[in-house]
Amino acid sequence: MKKTLATTLILALLLALAGMPLSADGHERWDGADDLAVNPLACGMGDEMMSDEDGDMEEGADEDMEMMEYDGGMVAMHDDTAGMDITLVDVPKLVGIGYFAATTLGQQQAAEELGNVSVTTDAPTEANIDDQIQVIDSYITQGVDGILFAANDPVAIAPVLRKALESGIHVVGYDANSEPDAREWFVNQAEFNGIAKALIDSLVDQMGADASFGIVTSTFTTPNQARWIAEMWAYAGACYPDLEWLETLEAQEDAGLSFQQAQTLINKYGEDLDGIFGMTSVATPASADAVNQAGLCEDVAVVGLATPNAMKPYVNEGCVRDVILWNPVDLGYAAVYVMRAVVDGEFKPGDTSVMAGRLGELVVVNGSEVLLGPPFTFTAENINDFDF
Image (cartoon, rainbow, N blue to C red):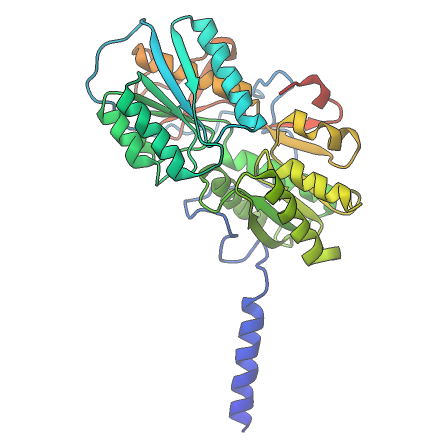
């Protein structure tokens, strides 16, 4: 009888532990994180990974960048179009949201400056990888000189991108990467560990090193968000082990669903919820709206990535302290300049930098990534200076 009772108690304890959310120092990664190697930055708050208001990298911020061997893909033999007019198609995750409207604007600005580039943006209205693949495949059939993309799924999109390379079409990614060999270059908006540090530090600064939080993301397989969450997990575990991760919820880049998922976190965890991380430009303003409508601006910090126009009402009213991002107009702009340099043979495997118009010289990191720069923090002091 005692043995049976002891066994029952042990099983009950194990079940209870299994149902508890892991803290930042747990052995398993948070839901939504990928399983790639992580590289958390040094502990401590500061602006060493931030940019100034002009978007310039702080002096010495790239000293630790380590060059790796080129790991991107190779395009098949094709007609030499160096210096000639080229036609590009841009296939972001979806159209109809402010973020990708901003990247499209940047692409059009670059095309106009260059004068020998034509760019068309075409993508599904929902972040659906199958629909995205179909759009890319149709342009391979039609024939274009280059494809720009932001992947909904890094693995699923890879075969159609390899098909483009094999067809002699140049491929450059931005915002959300594919498997490296499925594209030539990827324009990385900011180092993943830099974004992760900025997000975690902001929450801790506002709510303390033992805050409890939830995450509203797009999907568990969206590459850039999965990478940010993995690096957040690593940085929090190393620097703030008392942080408590409660739950990660998917919202499919949908504003209504993002609002509902933020409400779910508010209603489910009540006073135990100190913060919500919004991992998309849709989820962050929707989460801020949910917190604002619940009258919890003083109790629940919303920290995330979003465009300044979407967040101005919440920042200006004091419901959100800061917003972390980069300039998506510059991101789209850089992608076109990188593509032009590739087509012209001016940017090749092994190069350590590339010139990108008004952005100047951009450095190569991680083998085949072009780094736009460090993350930028929008606050009440500067957010009204931006319009995108």
